[in-house]
Length: 396
Image 1 (cartoon, rainbow, N blue to C red):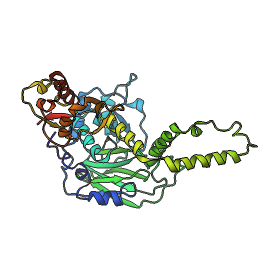
Image 2: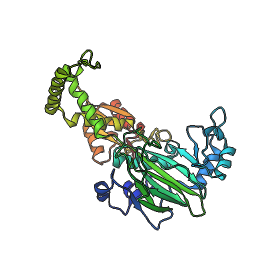
Image 3: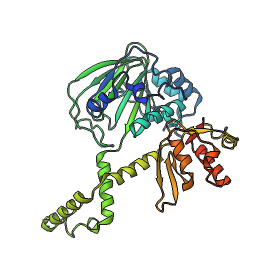
Image 4: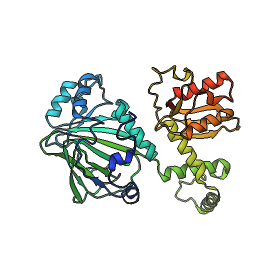
């Protein structure tokens, strides 16, 4: 997929020609962005209705891989799942014909193109990107009015969908702080638009919305959900790190603190003392490094070719380069006796003498077995093998 249209500039593929800097300055987590284009085939490399039809007919899906929804009357899962949890193809097709939306959640976990697209967006945004697929028949609505607890990009692949945007009752809700019908007020629509094939919309979390098919054809769109870490998450980690060095944070709350006659005077003074410590010692870098490493480790490595090309690193003179989109951070271990390359799926450890070769690779250069000449022959081969097996490098 080296020449896939989303590879060169993932964010531009999604929101172009809208400007990236303008998006982050004026829209990100603040307001909706609607991108209209006369490019009906823009997203067809990612997915199509025909491919979904093929998947449904050829793959034995289960209840975690397929869902259905209809605003009225609602659809229940036992209507399209067998008692054992498998998908009932006939029931799904019949419900779809009767106006229910077919949903393929987390399809990027099964589809190579969507996986690669998510990986590309993650390289720009530094957050987990997931896809949910929605195929809706004509004159139908899958969900009632609601908001999401994560930002989304909506990529209209085929057909048309009519969207309505409302107010934002909760600005940037926490993950899991979902919409509650009857508790959250819904305004009159503040914006109404039709997404046509090739168009895109960005909807920040907390913004109430709904959508229904427009026109006479079926509507297929990809919802890309952005699962982010927040400043609150970072602050909690930073406070935890300060607490490791100060026993005062780890003391229990005063006995009897829940009684109605409890005097909070001493507790207030201790609390202020702890806040003062935080003001002096709270720092960003250690917590941010932890979040960076955790994010990188949690990505799935791109190991394409590692099996069929298993012998590639052993070929005399074979050259390799850093694989596109491979996430990484270079570090030393605690004893500074080894080099640690944190990458998708975990971390790889090398002798310090491998640093020139590793650095050359990370700087965009080509490397070969000869690049590890400062190591013994067996260690040099093992280092190259390891980089290749874990999808860090690919043939140049």
